[in-house]
Amino acid sequence: MTGKEQLDRAVKDFIWNIVEIHSQIEEIHKGWAQLLGITEHQWLILMAIDELDQGGGVSGIAVANKLRVNPPFVTNQTKRLENMQLLARVPSSDDARFVLMSLTEKARTGIAKLSIKREALNSTMFEGLDEASVDYLNKRLAVIATSSRLASQKLNIGVL
Image (cartoon, rainbow, N blue to C red; front, side, top):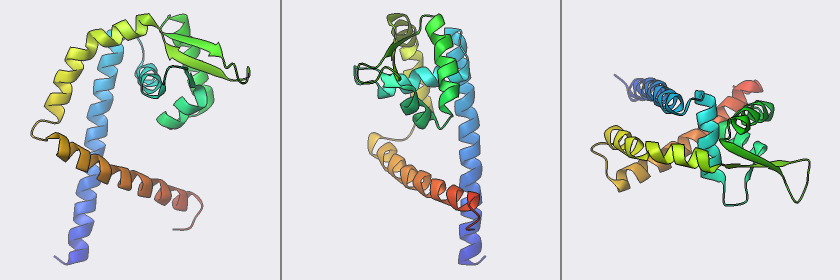
């Protein structure tokens, strides 16, 4: 096998491993969501808000960008989460056209109850990897993610 054929095989294997990992993570997210009585997408929105909120709330656009979804989808789902009392939505003090969202105590309590199970799953998923290995892997994946976005853009505009 030539060097190019080996690289092609390695890239194909990598892509299929990512597809498998993505599929398994989706199943895990569905499971967490079910435990809270919400959908997988709603779970991801709560996780994104939890990740992004620095104490002043998070805009729907920031959540949409984090999840790579359309802002109207986030608006629709966050209204549902608000009705379930898992999310607080308040107009921004800077610009009332924008809504800032934050988790309610009910959401924080529900997520906290899952924390021991989440830690156990994370330990299982990353068994055999130390912190330095996970950090190294994250840095390499971030480079691939950036390059993947560029490749996708090139494909979408017909450059490739």
